[in-house]
Length: 289
Image 1 (cartoon, one colour):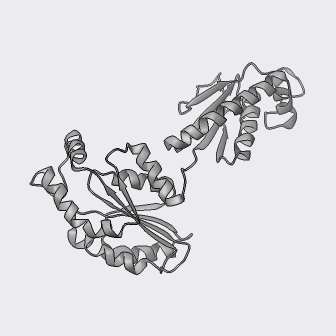
Image 2 (cartoon, rainbow, N blue to C red):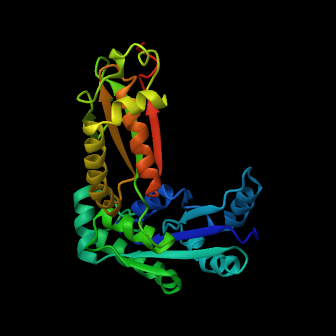
Image 3 (cartoon, rainbow, N blue to C red):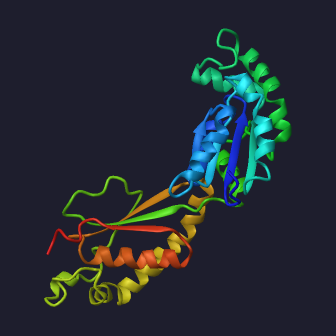
């Protein structure tokens, strides 16, 4: 593989230091993630990624200590890849022994580096095996005092330079049908003027400009949209900082055809104008006439 647009991130670290969490953070960044791939197969795997349609250009490889003879070859692979592809980075996760011991006591798992010995022995064995990779790391993260959210945020910041913005999913619906179970914020907009009672507007939906104008271009609609925008301007950066991948917002009216659709579309425009990625679903728009 020689394409300059390719980005490869290796993740190494002590068992229990958060390797799975780091890989999950990279997966959220659309990296193709593979765990414990033998070093001898990495070149073949990267070739397959290059030949895919479209080519896979963001790849994360977790380095495991369960096979020491595979691990010993990783430094040579790193050296060979650097300069041949766009970017090759190594993240190494460290953690204090006492914290690792506590984590193993809580999970009651056997340490992979000492299946028939003590956790303490396993930790020391891994430290010896990972000395070379730790020295080669572009990013060394001590996870002793980090929770999973903080570790994810740290990995994202180091790889893309900032926190991944929370994606907003907007769902318009009607209260006469079951309320969506996945919504995390729900707004009832049945206080807005109802186009259903206007004979000319009733056959249309909130996707129609005249319907949206009737529902929103009034004192209540204008004030509500202003307050809603202000609330989300406050909340969204907090969700970003928390590392929340998605936020689902439900907008409900009586039938899910007029007012909720108009509000969801207006809110989507506001959020997109602020640079936010937004998905919109009008669940019940075709159900009620």
